[in-house]
Amino acid sequence: MKVEDANKSVVDFPHNPYYRVAVLGLGGAAGRVVDRLAGCRMRDTRMCVFGMNSQEIDDVSFAEKYLIGDDGLGSGKDNLTAMYASRKLLPVVNKIISVPMMVVYVVCLGGAAGEGCAKIFLKETKRNTYAGKMLIAALPHHLEGKDKRERAKKRIKELKPFVDGVMVVDYENIDATSVSSLYKRADDMLVDMARAFVRLPTVNSILDFGISDVDCLMRLAKDKIINFVTLTGDMDYIKDRLKHFDKLLPARYVSIADVSGMVCEICYPSIKTFERFGNISNILRVVLYDEVTDDNCESYKFKNAEMVKLSMSIDEDMKNDDIRVNIFLACRYW
View 1 (tube, rainbow, N blue to C red):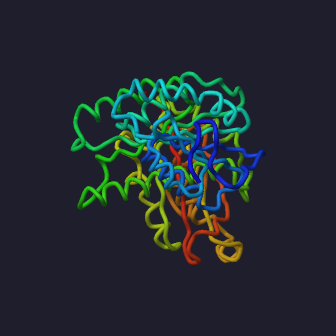
View 2 (cartoon, helix red, strand yellow):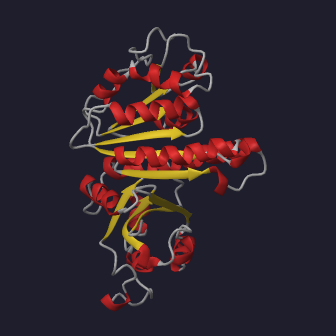
View 3 (cartoon, one colour):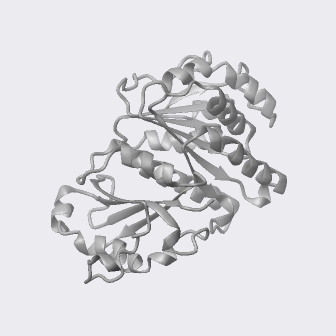
C-alpha cells in the first residue's frame, strides 16, 4: 500500500481506541525498533512510526506509519527541513497522544529526521495532563563523528524539560566486532528496553503494581535519567547475579545509597513456571537484603531509597525454563 499523504495511516487494520500507551518511533532507525515492538504481543498499546524516507516507511510491516514531507526522499541531513515538515503532522500527533496514560518517544539521535521530529513533537504538541512522557534515545558512536555525538548529547538536555523521564542506549558502551553488529545490538537493546518499560503499565502484575508506581519512579530521578538492567536465565543464574547487585549498577552510581527509587519486575513464561517457583522469597531477599537467610529490617539494602516496588508478570514470549528480572533505577543525585 502506498503512502498518499502525511495524515493517512497505511495500516490495513484499525488501532485499538482504548490503548493505554502510545509509542512513537521518530526517524528510520527508531521506526525499525517500534515496528519490531508492534510485531510482539503488546497489549493496550498503539505503535506509530514517523519518517521522511518513503522506502523506510514502506518497509514498516506492523506499526501505523506516517510519511513526513511531500517527496519521501528523506531529510537530506537538514534538521530545519525535518522540523518544518514535522509541524504539518502536529494535529495527527496531538490526536494520538490525547488518549493514553503514557506516551513513549523512541529516537536514535544523530539523524536529522529523528532529531527534528523529537524537537517539534515534544515541544509543540499539546500536553496531556494525565499522561506521563518517556523519551527512549540512542546516542551515536564517536566513529559516526564527534560533532554528531556531541550534538546528540545536547539534544537530550534540550528535550529533558518536555518529558518526565529519559532512558538512554549509548552506542559507545556496546561491545561489537563490526559496525553492522553494533547497530544490530543497539536495536536489540532498544527493543528490550522499550518493551520492558511499556509492559510495566500495560501488563497486569500479580503483585499490587500500577501506572502510579511508574510515575513515581520517574519523579524520583533527579536528572530524569532512568537506568535499566535486565537479567535472563534460570533461577540459579538470577540469584547469583543479584547477590552482587553493586556490580549491576551503572557507572554513575557510586553505591546502592545513590538509588532513590527502584522497580524490580520478575517475569515468568507461564503460570506453570510461576507455580513451580511460586515461592519467590529467595529471589526477593537477594534483591532487597544483604543476606539471603536474613530478612530483618537492619539488613535492608535499599532502606535509604524513597521507593522500592516489585512487580511480577507472565511473559509468554519467554523460554519455558527462564526467569527474567527487569530493574529500573532512579538516581538521587543530579
